[in-house]
Length: 365
Image 1 (cartoon, rainbow, N blue to C red):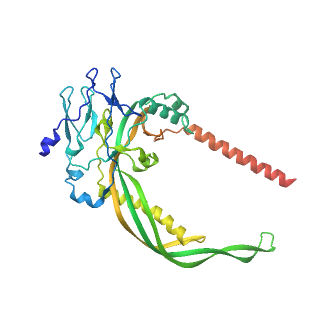
Image 2: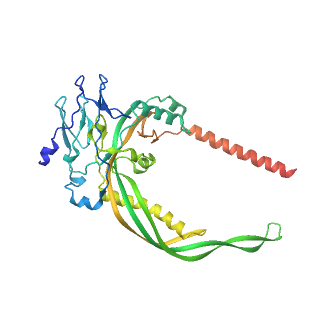
Image 3: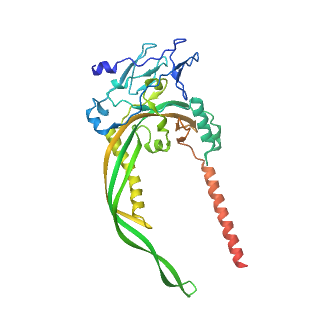
């Protein structure tokens, strides 16, 4: 199949068996539901396990670099419209029918697993309202925001990595001891106090750890730190990838190559390994002078995680939040009330002044 033919391949079609409209995946279920007549069609879950793949397999895959990818041309099976998009799934711009591309025709690594949506649009909006009402130092007018300006169910691509690690290190273990020290106080009297010192001893050794499903966002369009805050994800509840779970939702292609993702994952592993080394060194303080980590049996997979992207308008400014479509966890932007913050600072200063006054009065008596 040529690149042009692949890019123009018709997307998966999901007609309603009752009325002929296009059905969409219903969050929290294993069915496709018609938004018009309510008819439900069962999704046949693939009879296979979610699998990791050896990192060495990447060199054998017929994939294109992200920089060379072109837009996929959708041919809507409902209205016949042709649209171009870099997304793996979305809605037809003309009739709203779900469009899901064949990932094998994209020139990228095919998703291995998907964690289906569990929260529908209404539940996402409820989570947003609850989050808004719980914000400290928020303007009072923010409480009046009762709905998001827009909410968009989006599957975000993530890489996961497994690896056995063995890390050799050298460093030092610090142990506290105390000595007596004489000094003259403010009244001219000689006093004695205990002063802490640290005695250092050389340390060396090796720590081992197995990392399972180290998660790395595969898109730079949303902040990695914010996406990390949506964790934890019930990855054990993911299912083998099937395009039906994407029907009615927007799905981003990955834009971070798996090799680049592995380097990010190794950075996350390094933070944990440093903690292991410190515990292995022991003592009261630790110094790590050198370390070298060997990785073995590195495995990877591409999976899709469900997020509601929501926007709400306040004070002529639009704020974006992300909602974990499994747990309801909300992370995002919010306005602050300068008046409330100033009032809190003033109250704190007055309380401190009152405490100082009471102490002075007590000493005078």
